[in-house]
Length: 148
Image (cartoon, rainbow, N blue to C red; front, side):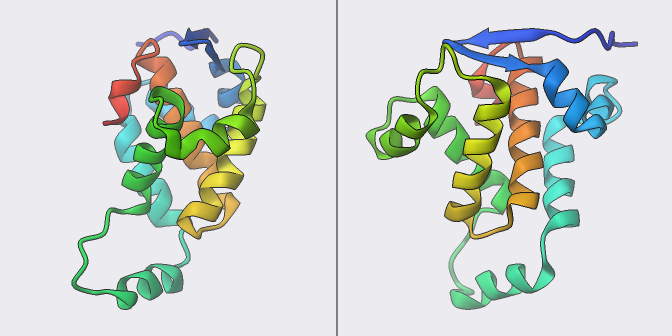
């Protein structure tokens, strides 16, 4: 059985406090106990929380287009912001500020609001998604490639 001892990981100057994430999103314990994979958890989360009319609206705009799910897009976007130096994410990086002094709560809040705007979904959907993504990176000992 996996230990539930809280830990704080630092990846490229970004500190992810798993204790904070577990206290605000207790369902993450299922991932820690290996009852679910983080990717499966994130996929089911978006299905459970997403408004069905939003999903139908986005598919009806361009039915021929192969669209990534909101979950896949969220992973790519967070990876782009936190793990790359791609200039298209400079705006959100400026809003985040100095990664070395940024708290997990701040990262979670800023990215959740930004992601809600980019994906066009509610913050009540994006906040747990970002929490799962941050938790996954922390569980992977800071390996951002777990998102790709």
